[in-house]
Image (cartoon, rainbow, N blue to C red):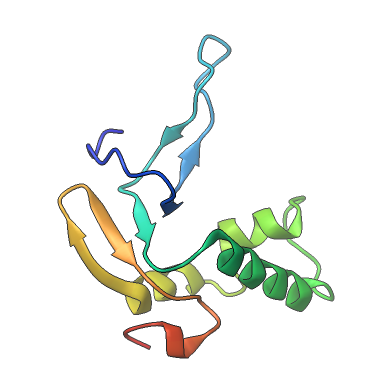
Length: 112
């Protein structure tokens, strides 16, 4: 990891992952400084994605992506993920940014 953050078992990361550069590589690369979700479980985040998928069902997607991939790439609105990072920010260190809360549960976000 270029940022130097190796992480800890059980952490949930919010990252931008790039695919292998070509067939000679069998690994993906984390493109940005990792956002580490604190006090957010995988189940909590999966439940959030399910709620967003339910809200998207009636909307045609602009790209041929599955609904979950579309949400993670674009969010339900243009600035959704930027706003989440801003509202969920709890701190940082040189190698990582720490977030907490679930995007659609305002009371869970420290700065909402």
